[in-house]
Length: 382
Image (cartoon, rainbow, N blue to C red; front, side, top):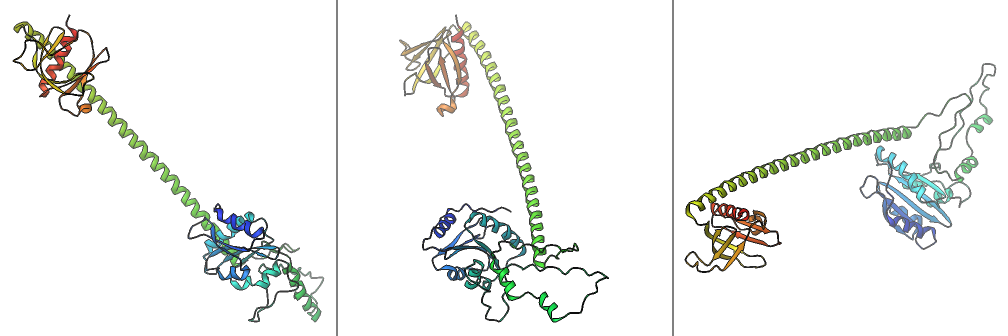
């Protein structure tokens, strides 16, 4: 049931009031939140201006009158019991923040916050407060405890009521004034009588207790709901992680199978090439496009693979002298697909141990696989 009083404007306005600046009052409220208290307004017109800014909700006022400070907790009669209980707790927190407070006044109607009554609570006026125009007797905002009558014993029969007895049972205006003149921060229940009887709780106290009990139950319900929500989120997150892990494992397994299948196919193709060379006496040949190491250009060439070397010609009809030649013979350290890197279908990269990398792409997938098999054969040829 704690409240949030971190609004910096609250302390700024409070310091302005207690330091003696023209600002002499402020009002705090919730702004339709549950427990975040912020500054509503402030001014220089004193208690009268503060009263004119009170609305039908839970508000906290702080006012300077002469050299005294009063904290006002205004809870409209239209406010529900649950919010009344919360205001009772939050009012103590506001009082703890405003340490210069001389008196705290809890009120539910504006008549209890008249200038005369507040000044009387602050000890700035002698005698009882001025009665209301309606003629109703002035009562203090906090209940005045009255001692319960002592139980009578059979040996001492009750004397008949006399005028003097009646007078002693009724509090005089002077006794009422003495009770009101002393600042009372929070009303205390009447002490138990010598016979052990206690003052029964008022309807207001029962309403506040019921509201507090209801609030505790609601907070417990919210805590349980939050725990269940976190458990569900944890389970969902773990399920997603397991699903991602399983998918990753499946993809890795699939890629491994594909690589093994490609390797087996290339080995078979390499053996086939070796047999073809033995029968025909000539190496593998065909068209391929190459981007040599360090060059930004792609060039289409006719290649012929013999032994450990690959010769590149302009076309298949001009084989007098190769334009360039690539000698392998154990220099290849890696051959892998480059379709993703180059964004070109049927492309692959050949990495040499010298740090050079050459890119190639063929016209068809079959031509690419034949070329890769040829590179592998040339790299292993003695």
